Length: 343
Image (cartoon, rainbow, N blue to C red; front, top):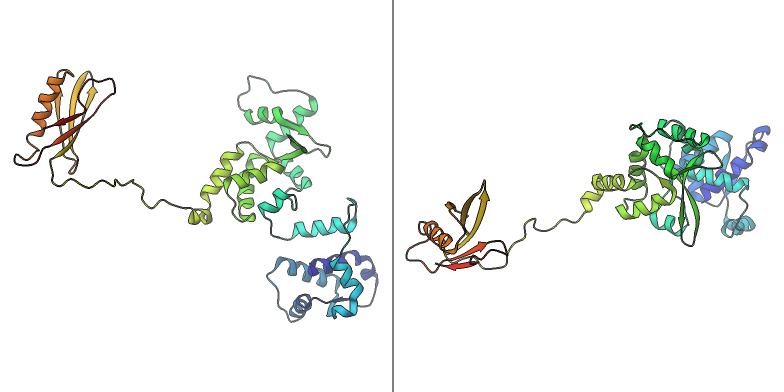
């Protein structure tokens, strides 16, 4: 905050500083600002974007930064901590503050944007006007809207233009926007984002907003922007993020494990099914422990035929002196065959 205030003071006093022949001195009770200036004098630099912007402004206007106690500048200190709320949209101080904040990387969160405290980054209308002018689809859409025409139905390579014409309007500043009307909320103008910059913009916003979920990113972005297939791109960006993939929960086991106890011996539990291929009936029998599979052909699906074929398949697999074997048949509900057969 103190860094931003010092930058604003230098900017607003630039006309006076430029005509004077005396070095301007900035008195501040912020020791970090003074220490950053002293590092600059020693040839050192700061990695902080805000401090770098402050040092750049100090170097530009050749000002000197000195420390002063807060008790010595009590009126200024009180005014800085209890600033009056400015509601004038044409205020030069507020405009310069917003411009300075937008030009320096700062923290943005989904909660602040949804609560109306902050705005979504990268929503400068002048910049988006330049980007839209470079997109051929949006240029053609603007021309159709200005002339009141529509593309021919025979054209099949202008799908995006036809979709834009269904929802797009031209704002007062010439920007192509989509108006969103929600209950109990004023109408909102969402800037149309071309396909060329859509994925890069959403990736940058995903990183800038501290890796929100797909739903959170959709809710925030749709407040200010409009793009074709936005939901698919948001999902693709979230799934392709390495940071989110590292924190994503994974199941402990990919294959569900059964809690039943295993069979006491091999060859006592079987699963049978009848397959039909090329009008031919095939009986498939599989042993549940070893997955040993045996097959035979059936003439029909009668009970006697199935019973005889099942015995022929089980005899070579089932131990002669073993316990009773149980075979379960996976069948259609309308079939009249027995589901379980004890051999």
